[in-house]
Amino acid sequence: MLPPILGVLFDGLAYGMLLFLLSVGQSVTLGMMNFINLAHCSFAMLGGYVTVALMNRYGVPFFATLPCAFVAAAVVSVAFEQTFFRRLYRAGELDQVLLTIGIVFISVAVAAYFFGTDQQPLQLPSYLRTSLTFMGLRFAVYRLILLGLALLITIALVLGIEYTRFGARVRAAVDNERMARGLGIDVDRTFAITFALGSGLAGLGGALAIEIIGLDPSFALTYLIYVLIVVSVGGLGSITGSFTAAIVLGISDVAGKYYIPQLGAFLIYLVMITLLMWRPLGLLGRR
Amino acid sequence: MALAEKVTSPLAYLQAQTRWRPIEIVFWLATLLPYFLFPNYLSLASQIAITALFALSLDLILGYAGIVSLGHAAYFGVGAYAAGLVSKHGWGEPLTGLAMAAVAAGIVGYATSFVICRFRHLALIMLTTGFGLLLAELANSLGWLTGGMDGLQGIHTWKLLGAFRFDLFGYAAYSYALAMLFVLFLFARLVIHSPFGLSLRGIRENYVRMPAIGAPSRAHMRTIYTIAACIAGIAGALLAQTTETVSLDSLGFERSAEVVVVLVLGGAGRLYGGLVGAIIFMVARDQFSGIEPQFWYFWIGILLVGVVMLLPNGILGGLAKLTSRWSRS
Image 1: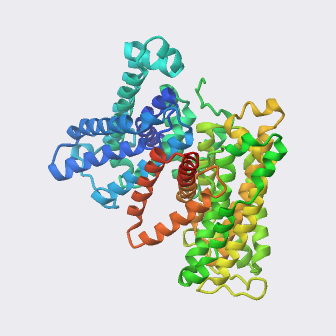
Image 2: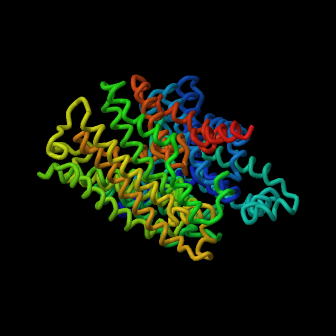
Image 3: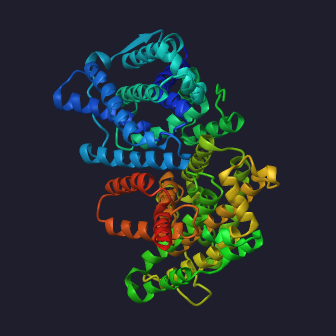
């Protein structure tokens, strides 16, 4: 028999994977352009609503909606990047924060207008709602799939950044943007593609998140905090850093809610502040 | 600044800055208009004055010292809860309650300033946000003290100066809030036009280089952060005393974001920015109050995008640009 703490660990791990999917794009784009994009979770929310709308209104199967969520978030984010964000890369952090938080407010209102303020219902296919029993512990199939999918994506990202030509451009731009430009790398284009990829992953994360944490218009604000915690604790531009931070945050959040529920989110904020004071550049941050 | 070119010595520059311009006198006389023109809207006017004071406190750190904070409501909330608790437990005298709230917020501000002054950029934004969220969670979990989600009930504010009762019409409330706003505005004006105020602007422009000319950046940031926390606490206390209730949202993230919007709308880094922003923002919200709150946020969002894209220095910045172009031609 396995002790119940393993169940908590498993749930925390699945939750951490979700947080990783939501935040990895933010981490890389922030590391590249130093652009503080608070609207990142709005793109995640868009992915969630695309999945809900496709499933509930048009009867598209769940797994077929996931690529749509990815593509929708990626396309919309690039449109925003080209029209608004691009003009503020050289501006101060205040302008960036204001613009993107304005977009968050707009997205919350638009979501409420089209879908109402309620939690969105999502009926997963029955084979995803079962759970496996292994040595006395129950593991939900959905969470297992989520875990596997997130691990696959992480491996693909790490390998892609490490071994492809595009990955080398991204790394160069994160390390030293001006030098990369000097070497003839089209940083703006690299950034736009990275941005689309990151937002697409957030959209995918938003779609996968509905079953675990639900979806309502306040998603864009609530999970923004979690994403920022992952990014700033994990270190800008670091995929492995975000991965570690997301797992630590996921497990400590689930464990905190399970063992000391009266503390609520207090613990998370306290951990974040302490970590930031100790290492302002993040756990694995280099700059 | 045409003025800066004409004067020679730094002292003369500062003195020229402190001179009262006619438009300022007109502005402050106009704050008396609500008594005659809109006597039914005096409670709204007192809310505007409180928001203006809160935005003024943020202007000191954000507009002048360049400390971007998304958690400034923490000090507003500490002030509000301090004043509310003092009044609930038997001491409802407004002015001393205000002083106690200022001290409470100032202590919290001074304690946090040691952390705040060491960081810039994203870490700073995250830390201020984190402190704000931490305090909001704390107030939520200490239900026996703060009333939790239901808010702090049972506040009773005594008569102002022993003579003026806080009534529904808001005469006393507006006079009280306006007087406080004016006094603290004078104080902020004094601070900003002092050599200390100049060094704050230096910190905003280049945080690293200021110590090289003998101005200790961190110590100055701690001082101004504490002052701003005190003023924010007074604004919170004013709200608690005039409405006789304190709710959790006085500490919340939305309030922190809102006051940034108010300040930026008016123009950060200008003494009147927060004041002008508060008037426009609060009047607009009053007019829109029939709409559901989510849709009100839609317009705030549009406003933010518009201000950042089209009016980078707020309404006052835009006006200053227009007048300088007009006076040149």
